[in-house]
Image (tube, rainbow, N blue to C red):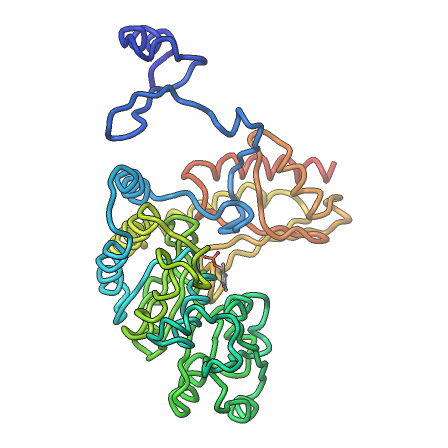
Length: 408
Ligand SMILES: *Cc1c(COP(=O)(O)O)cnc(C)c1O
């Protein structure tokens, strides 16, 4: 990086921008049109706290940091006009190849992917029905979606947006009984598979038997990379992913993968078409191209290398807190969703006199600020996959410091 004196010297040689220089800051090309703008620390200017993300992919924490490939595609797209449908057509083909699905489209997240998928199932290619959603009565559209009770933890609102009633079932017998002439869709939430009585394969089997389309919400379920195509190959009609979690595409993007005719139908409810349930769930060229670039980088990237880094980072943090008496360490990989090395810390509050939430507050209020996950009575949880490499050292020393202080 340039030091301040060199920077000023260089900048003052540029007549148009020399006077814009406010503070000591690196020089950046704002875009490929070569508009030279001084670096601007927007978040500092606004007084918005930035932090090291040792928690994971949380919407409230703005998800993930974009891959370099995503940023390049995003910036590139911002400088050209294209027809939105043409771009979705072409990017959809490439994404479908990468994810081994018949067809694909970019949505504004896994949640909207579910809404679009539901809409497509209800309307087919009928443009009148597209405008009628969410009022289904008397339209000839089906009116119900089935979900396992253990899976019904908020996200089914995405299909309720289309006006369907969500029917909860627990056992396979209940599922068979719940299916009727109004059943439009069977929704499976992949991350909750272990909590329900019916697994992904059995759910699909029942759907096939009764010719009911099945959708699997896999929002947070890469890695492993194979999950991208596992459920398409299994025969799920629709599969949804978040773009801004493990894929590190735009946080306001997601993927709807599935059968050709259903993706085509789903897109009738998507912008640029108005008078649709999806008009407010817009993605523009930047998200569409950025999503493809992120997926391409993910599929062709070296996940083994990333994994090794995450393991080393977790081990580094674990080593740092190990000497604190009363602290217990558990390193594990959640089986589905956020399937990455994870460090769970818990402690004996008689020895380490601090609560999980107090520890979180200490980490949050320090410099740099750090966010971790969990935080109940006497525990917190850490992942490193959303950090910048190297930040694990800061997290390790700050954690050690805070825990050791609480033993004093
Ligand atoms: C994150 C998540 C969603 C929502 O995904 P977005 O990409 O934020 O729309 C839906 N379902 C599950 C299981 C999730 O984890």
